[in-house]
Picture 1 (cartoon, rainbow, N blue to C red):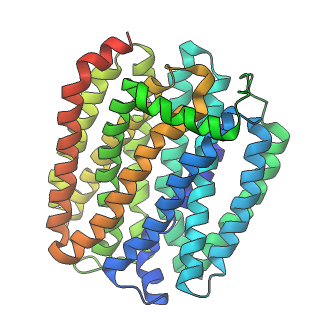
Picture 2: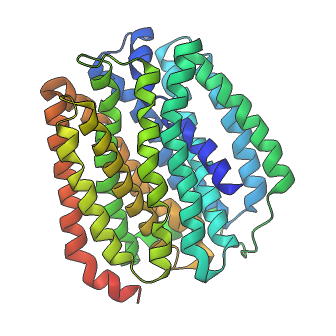
Length: 383
């Protein structure tokens, strides 16, 4: 259930990616500025991680999740009814904030409900739902947009969120975690203290930042590249690449088992190597579709395996601070995703698909080099 709800929640953050062309057309945005739609969503993500997600250590998680879900439903309706670009950007910001708060709250809830020996597997299972959700979001958004327009995507999602509200209210157990008595401001300060003092969090966060930047470099520019010649795909065709990426994402969910067995460092190196390798077939993707498909599978397999491994290691640090830990770690995610989304569309406008692939490969190589430089003391801290 948690994996299903996490998939539905996170999908809202990624619906816009295959819809950039019709959104840009309806609101008179250039290719370079179309990345601002994704940037507004990522700004909401960052604010949620800094100010909302830590509340899971202070307030009962189930009521908190239900309130966030009500507000998310309203935000989706606001996007669906947006008449001008300012309303659209504000709605996207709200969807990013509340969709992220829901998703990370569900992951922290799963970690709190799991036994320590199975925490990696549980986190991997829910994170697998997150990955499937964000990848299928592109395919679903494209299909609905082709049939009924991009506004229908957000109307349908609002209805699904209302149904999910009833399901969680009826079925979600209360996690057994003791709640912090800190005031809200002290809770936020403690999250920043975790960022300043936990070296594993710092190292894994920076790896995640670089990985998510590379990941979003591809997915943000992909819609622009595939909607142009030689492919000229419709939103549905562009979104279908989410189904391709799901193959790698399903395999990546198994990475949590490797973390439980003490192989997190080795698996991280392999996953980052796959992430870097993916840019070779992606660079050839405009010559033949088979190269693009192979690159998407490698990109999602490597990137999402790193994400699962990062979270598995971070959740070992302080069990009483799961929400703050996931919030702190995912701040790196938001920064990397926002950077990748904005720079990708700018580079695509000036240097085309080749420039995008060079940027993605450089970020992937930087992540691999940083992992190699920090692997020794990170291994010692988690032994």
